[in-house]
Image (cartoon, each protein chain N blue to C red):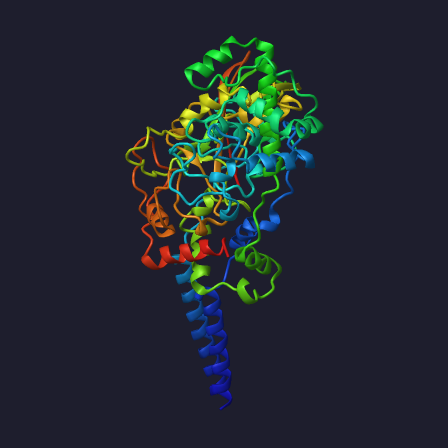
Length: 402
Length: 147
């Protein structure tokens, strides 16, 4: 009796030791560290944008918000920023490619946390939020306007509000109704005919429009999700309660995400993005114009008069290091696109830069299979995930939306 | 007495079982590869210079554009002045280059050069290669940084 009790005690101890060694411990210390680094509470406070002295001026943000929702900020009076960046849809439009005045070739990006990006658009062809905001205004497929018309519109519609923020408007009486270096042939000709000082006046008003819109957009930030509540409990050692508790499938998905599936390699930090550009072998869409991603955006951002090194930047040049040190000509930027944040992604199909995949299952299947890129070299290697593992990854991604 | 031997026997048996189980787990787990040399100070490839590479503000932060300091001394310990330095690198395990194009932007005296525009966008093994050309000749050095 004595022996058997001791023996069974030892056996129980041995069994515990074995379970500890090869059962399913929730997370290793390294995994816990990675999970903590993804939680929203590690998001630093928004940095001051020295290139936009109005970035944190409330009146500028208020004007920016008016402009953001104003259909008058387009050629035909019907398209605003909010046409594609819908306020009740995470500031995106659920379409594979955005539709403004015309049909574009790219998926509308959501705006949560947008002011934290070093680069804008899927290919990073702009280097500040205010320079980004100006681009759709003149894109013939988006708002299709021109900067001379926008300057006149500001004076006519928002003159007093504008001047309270930015100071006196220039004399626009001799500025043509429609003129832009990027517009139609007639608009280009009208722009060329303007004296340089007048071009600069119009460009200054135009830049300020972008700075006001950017000031508004800085307020759009990501919100806490089930994952964040789970991660905080994990970090503090509290047992996750209620919806913060993960199902075994969600835990498996999280483990894969930060482990064997390598998702966290690029989708890292509290915004789940490395803010960089990668070729992941996403196929082009038939019928859309040739799209080579980052490689073609380099020259565009360099040529943009509203870039950080241009004369419309506030503050000093030390803010321009991203532009100054960007990769200009490496093979890796061919068909490379920006790593999107995954926060809220489960609620906003379709996916990828031209809406190539209609479900998260398709996205995960793509990364598992890792097809070769049509151009350049995909950085993704095949994972051969099982059905169960792919479903677990999707289950985990949904915790970033709930 | 017999019961003591049974205890010892049982203990030995269990110990053997545990050792076996632990060994099995150990063999199944991926073995950590012997990591790359992560020293921040080393001789250049042809031993022309002694190079050290440190983050200017002391800490490496993932995802942030940072400046580092490359300090160059001759084999005799004299600071290397007027060196032309080019920077390249990447992640050997991912077959991709650097996400930025770091450059030697300033000479700070005493053989110290500011290398600005360094950014590590992901955790893992990074390499930075410096091609150095100075009065003493040309040489190169590779630093490994593991995040």
